[in-house]
Length: 120
Image (cartoon, rainbow, N blue to C red; front, side):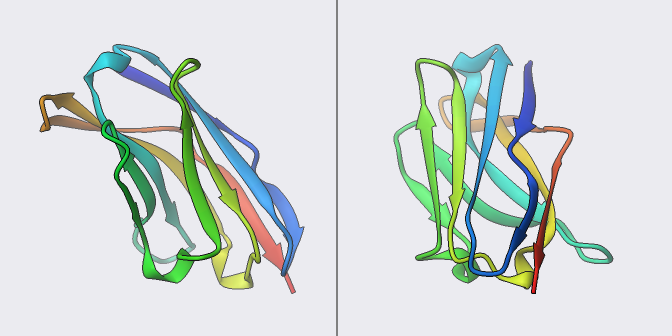
């Protein structure tokens, strides 16, 4: 299995930037894709951005052009650079791993979450 630990959340004014980081440990060779989801109060958990082992990225329409996902494979880290933040970006952000082999998903693994609050 894989363990995930996020960092980098906090409070920022609208228009500002934050960078989230997530480090993966354990059976990282079994990671098909890694990325970020978010959950605002009273809402479902939604995709923010993911990146596959091959480097393909997928972004929610609401963050395209503002957020950038990247990885540091040497350290098994994934980053989410968030620019031009809006109040509607306020949520708990969860690091996510699609865990399996050769593209087949065995399980979905989540980090503990980090709070991002954007004030107006």
